[in-house]
Image 1 (cartoon, rainbow, N blue to C red):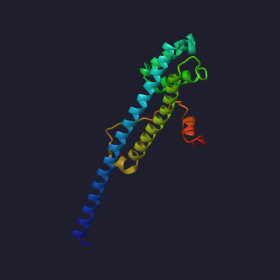
Image 2 (tube, rainbow, N blue to C red):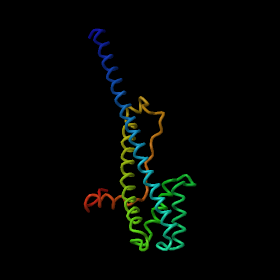
Image 3 (cartoon, rainbow, N blue to C red):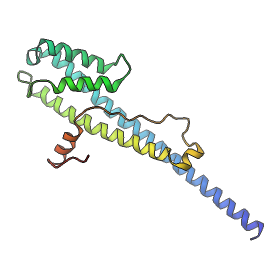
Image 4 (cartoon, rainbow, N blue to C red):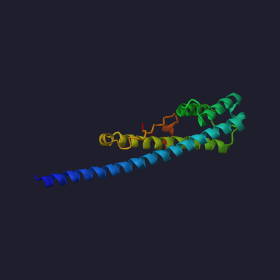
Length: 182
């Protein structure tokens, strides 16, 4: 091979590497935007659940009882602005309090019960979409070549958000009563 052929081959490889890097950076940017959008939806639903729990504890104390209403109000307040900084822990505490409420919430308005139920379903789905976006971002950023080239290395890896939200029940009921995937 002549030097011109070698130079051409190196130029082609360099061009392919630049094109691949640009494509990968674009994909990483889209994944980051997807993570941000999914987090916004998840955060909105979590805030909605905390607001509904606070409303239930404040306006419908007779439906849940005085002591339980006080605990529900405290966990809803903590979920809105976690003092310890651990949002997952605060959301798990609120979720447990809501699951321990009397079945059917007799005495609470039907609209509030339906809102709580719908929000629980939307939280499960939003968490799944968020964690899927985080997983896809992790998979792309931890591949060998993007790691070697340090693509998006200045941006922190997004964290998974794992709470006890009854996701198995959500996915099985959304699928028409079939079994949920593990």
